Length: 509
Image 1 (cartoon, rainbow, N blue to C red):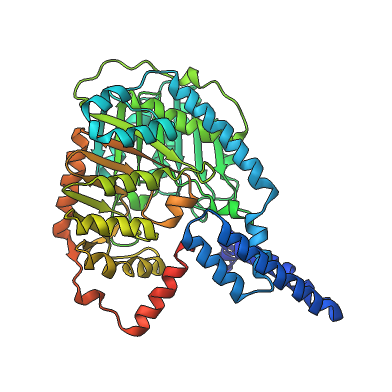
Image 2: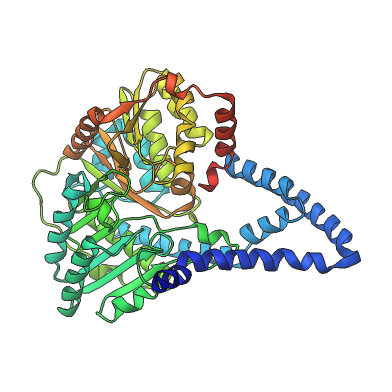
């Protein structure tokens, strides 16, 4: 009994919450000891809050973020402006942007060293020229041909491909996940990584500290280092009032020897491959790449690895000349997104798919928390005759987020969009497919955090067999889903009011 209590007290979650409360205490309590000067301090802070609100209004930012900050500041006018200052105006923010700009330029330069297939794609798909121009010219990614893609759904299909790729490693293994959790999946993975590191393979592992909190022991990176595995814990959580702590590494990238790569929604935890059931049946997916596109994922991994390690590494030693591959029709554009880049790449990929859809667009997402622009785009597409269908979970992992997701149903359904909930459990896939031509498979959810705050990645697939596989997988899910009816989303005034409040605070979810 005592060991259980001790473990709880010393758990990272409890420690983090305790330190956050302590910080709030140290910020606010001193003001109550200012005595007769308190009134003067209040006037100064009130004035400061007004100035901050005017600054927020003038910023080029998402309206949803402006609204939530303005409401928060007016709700707590004495401390609201100060909290905004502590969160948004930090000495580290400018340095971080310069750091990531530096490595972003290196990524662009590395991808430019090798010919891409953008001119061929422009010729084959002239209707996509604007999308190609955005992803190549503005965002700095490559169009890849000579690439075999295999759609792996559900997660149980991913696991044997993943293990086989690790076992084949001769030179290097790069692994980057939002969550790594102790269990059978990680045990098998770690056993292979330890063996490969002992054989001289360059093994690198990067995982997000917040994503993996409670899933791994403290100082786990040091433990991996003892096996010869290079490990980096991304953005270690510190109980500070800093917006940098909101920027999590939500990417999932695996690269082995520059010959095979993976991305998708899957993390390393047993629920992702059906070994345990936390929220019913867990539905996820990934894509395996072989050929030219693997270089893009190699560079994307090294970009973030070097950024967090502050190293300038020679990327070229990891480049592999790819043989001509069979069954490689179509094109692949791997892409990534950074909250420091000024480009919401993942959002723009989705938006271009929505606005460009002619016949249909099918979406799978665990969270559906939309800003006004994306909601308007979906509604306009549906009203223009596009068959839009969206699958979300029936069993939530986060109840408040689930309630917020459901708050969007009525507006979307009124426009003719069909909403389905995956009855067996939780759907974690992040995919979109339209018109039998184009699909996006990756890590970003249709929510504020993924599209504006997190580091994300994905792949745009055009004309490949995988596009048909994504579509068929979606259609195969529909019999397992409950189609939400109009009567189910008719809300009473209390529920409607509560959901309206949740919508206001949605950018924080």
